[in-house]
Length: 246
Ligand code: BTN
Image (cartoon, rainbow, N blue to C red):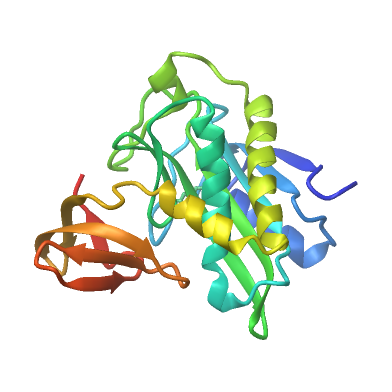
């Protein structure tokens, strides 16, 4: 099999990220191999979150990447290219798609997809990465306490084929990953910033129980969010330090 060709489909298991990480322990895997689970029983989200997905309704998959060229310091570039791939995929169907920092895909003020990237490190470089993606396709009702989920079906009224959409998303992610492999950092950084949700306009945020108005001005090379407050202070935040008030 060539890179970016293989899709491993499982009827039911806990988490595509966990399954892919186990596979990497036991086998030589081609880059771009996908693990897709029809009925993901224990999908994991960022931090302590879980990921809700009704069986057979959504894309719940992981892509195995071998970015040996990337230092761990620059792991955030992976978030950017996966987000951009998903952004481009969804933008081909809908207007009003944005990337909400650090790597959620939003339609208007609702979350269409989430990304969980887990890296294994060798020295100061990345040995392998498992990029887990949950993209809501056909689910019509959400039951967990996830704040604002939405599916493509809820937006367009159409049903989507899991197989076709998986191949299409893979195409867009591969395109941006290959830009990273060939060193097109400036283009990736520019497109990522251009696609950011709530970029360069004032909105409300919460940090340390304080609510304030600020605008996003950028994201630094380590993936920290840069903002300018309405009181003219500049600040940088790591993931989970700052909350968007939506
Ligand atoms: C987030 O919290 O926004 C990230 C959600 C990532 C969910 C996906 S579903 C497929 C893959 N396997 C997991 O266990 N999680 C990711």
